[in-house]
Image (cartoon, rainbow, N blue to C red):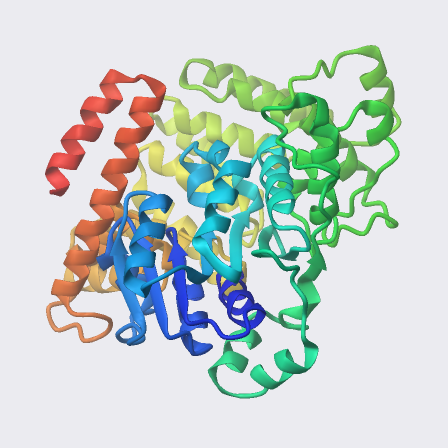
Length: 515
């Protein structure tokens, strides 16, 4: 939904948007919102225009006539292409920053990059940056927010869940004209788009973005990192909801004597209401461990001793490797004996460890005992199914996962669960027409299918010959080829960054097969 919010903010904060640019994977919502607002010319870019076209069309029809796709390999190339297409600077530029973070390039989101973005805007133009907080560590998020606020004074931030949208205008502050907003959102497709943002709509998540005394970058100037941290927290603390990842990132930046004063709320970020003690202790301990601090030091242990806490997940995860699976299994048994009333964490570790051990009937029996000890509606059932598949019993794993999803409400199911079930289902027996039809229905119902080449390929393999739902087979095969090329390029870049020659050879082979 933050993509819809980005498109609406870009359209509503500019008096008369004529030309807009949308950059980055997963920006179909922003394209549709701008088109609904009547933007005359929209340039949208992704690594593969065919894939963007497929996603932004929502599998229901063609893009709006105002939209033109650009093939650009970098944001700078997209800016140049949009200028050529629109005959001048853009009134609105919307960028998705999370793909950069997931690709290991969050360090490009600095003051010079924002100044270049500002220069590409027409006077009074609107810059919008979409962030997924879970894709950034604490330093990166602080740097991004601080650099943006320093480049676009008087900006705004819109936040919901773990999504964050930063908005700024060239040379002028962002001012909300309430009457204009109400009139524009009063009817038509804009009202429908705003309605997707939930109760309170767009305005409920908007706050003014505080600018630091000077532009700071926590990476290049460690001396001002605390100021950048305060700025990042001022934005994050005003979210309607905050994720556990955001809580850990913020706690990791605090010294123990300061961290002990705060109790971040488990859902709504309300600093006045402390969460359960065990939640606080677990998050605090985990955050310090992730920050590289010595959690065994006397001062940390003294602080943690004052907080009741559950078992520490980070203490067991280093054991979850094939060479230490037996050790992890023994440690899980020890933790289960220590706290028999709370065995979920120990059982999950045990299941993951068993999945790494050689397949045997003894290990499968252990998994069946763990599976029977938990309600089918618990998320841990998904871990049991994964482990059973690794133990060479895909049919039983498929039945477990299917029973789990049958009792889970649709809005509580993890994205990708149906696609995983379809893959297990096809492994569990001969590929009969009935089995293929059932797998196809699950794949069609899971949005992750269209983001993974593996699942997309399975969709085409199970598609009935007389299927009439969705785009035709030729369109789907073109979209699959585009996604395969995207994944191949991503794998090549990842192998190059890690200096892994073996992975690079594998990635190059995959790229050759995708072309």
